[in-house]
Image (cartoon, rainbow, N blue to C red; front, side, top):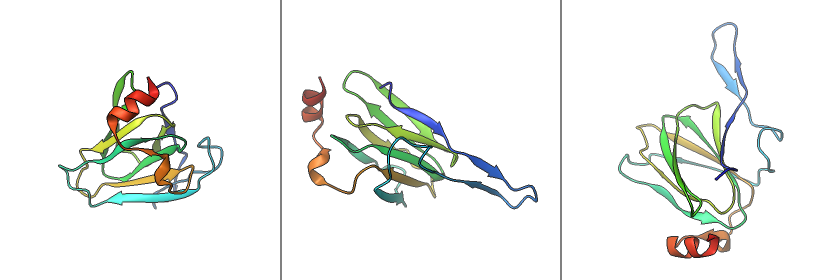
Length: 133
């Protein structure tokens, strides 16, 4: 779980009070971005994720609202709240993830190191545990 980390995203505050700007460039996250997608209108009692990846890495940002991420490397579990658009969660390969407790209006931006490939997913928890232990 040591490779999972919260990464501070640069934030520029406009001196005239016109808001803030944040950006993600090649030096912020440790992979080239091959896919971008976002989750929104997720009901508060629903969850997303429920899988791990063999090769793909992800960087999650709460652009709006908040949600929680349950992380599991097969040995330990940890829960992370994302609720600031200038902080992102780096999830390396081999970590099971579940996203839940979405607030009203929450938007989760996902930056991924690979294009979609169904064969990269481990969607069965028992298979995940057997693969990484």
